[in-house]
Image (cartoon, rainbow, N blue to C red; front, side):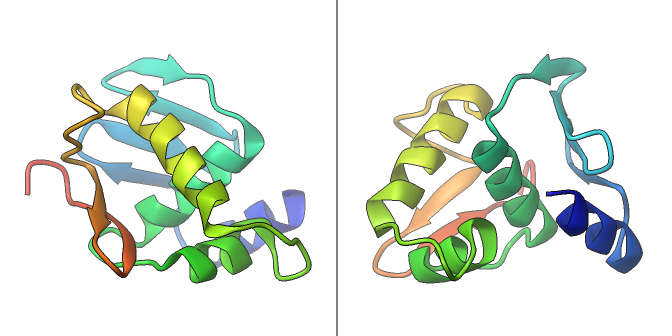
Length: 115
């Protein structure tokens, strides 16, 4: 995790934002509209990855490799479960998400806030 954060700080900003969502990579903290959210390590890593790639569709396999690592064996359902948990924290209506969008047959995309 520390190595990932070090690389992230070298390659880009330490704080990623999307509207009122703020992901602080160096402090491993997430705030939504000024309220601190409590996330697991994987939820944080997944949210950071999606926030870094706003607007880009990311397939389940890509997310598993990039967030969990290539040596870890999981199924796409692992990604689905973590996205559902993030939606419960981020979305006003998790059953009808506006931020973490499912792109049928392709994967997930974080939409630009208000876009």
